[in-house]
Image 1: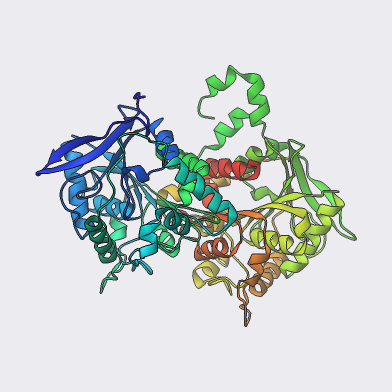
Image 2: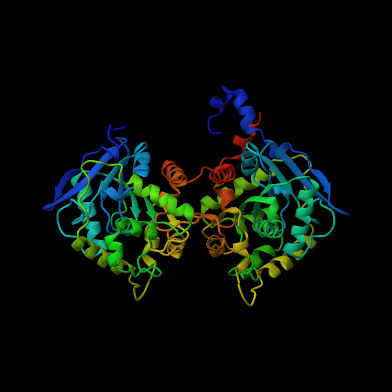
Length: 294
Length: 300
């Protein structure tokens, strides 16, 4: 276990192809790292410390700003495919041999693209609140002026359901985001957000043929986690992923929206732990039951 | 389970946690007014019991000991055969409300005030009906390989399923393999392990369901599947109990989309779909499912 936590890990930089990428790396050394890829308009400070610190107990955790985002240099490209190239360049620059991806929303799209293009490099895939290329209603509106002006109201409205329980969970999540006091990331610029919006809209465009055909090529063990009332990526997309991916488990939480895994973080952390420890259940033979009879 | 020698160092713990009650609990009978239902009752007393309902033409024999023994560590487990099934008296009713009347009478005759429900396939429909008709009795609901009334493709079994159900010269075990598991070698092997597990109990096994059971259950399924003119899934919002919905990604008996529909319409439900599996995903992912179910019932 490294001495650092989400709150204390210093931001570092690595350069590849003339671009300086910002990242934070902590957790259990000697494990296959979990690369965390964030949502639209977010930087490294957007991850819930309770989730990252818990993951860091068993895995190395890497937070990363893609090109043009937060403290990273370069320009945010307008497609998921180009973001994936940056992501891979960053990983290569760190000398990583294999990773598991935890991709939230836009990050989950990059995770799918990475799985398609570099299947050997990606061990397991965790898709949070995301959808397949050309999914249902993945048109994505621009942030309104009010949403731009009041990010807390935006998060409570988009990541949490209107119920009192969900809203209370949202307020706690927002409080936890402030637990890192020093060396905070730079905000996402207007230019970067414009690039990201173009990228997720391009990803959401329904292709003329073979709408979900590429999904069958993603053979990695995959865990899909979604909120039952996700208003950003409508829940049927998680079901579509589950039905088309060859080796995926779906978990959909109650009374929750885009931030379901934050609201249900206790269950989520348990589910992700089971998934990363074996993923597939061992089917015990009769003998093992017999032998356990007192 | 994997390390027997390690287990042997802790005989007391082993005795407490792994006793195979599914295999040893005697079959009992409870009169519900003119007819008696066969049931088995075992497990740790103190928590609300979980009452378990079986699949199409199945008996108590078919419950997976990995599930029942795990749940029994924390709470009483009650397996019950519907009227007309196994050694339960009478004839199988041909509607979910009629089955639910029996179950509610059974629960009250046992003197239980609060129960959890665990229903597989047609058993999951019975569980929904019990929750609708006696909501005050029900605390939590576990639904596996099932669907809502009027669900997608639930008006009748598909030709593929009917071919298996009516396959000449086949045993129920052979049919179950093709109905409950996917076509992958892993899934099929898991199915064979499940068949071995449910054959392990030697003590007073239930006789296989008589032909009238299947006939009546098909009628009950058709009524359950009928699509009303309005408010197709309106009943689901009345089931306010916390619910866990589980299925395999390729269920040919109750199409998997119905698990998604259940979760979208039930007010407080979680959905889990397992990879590479069908109707019997919980038999395939038996230990993961058993732990998931135990956590679901135990959670505050």
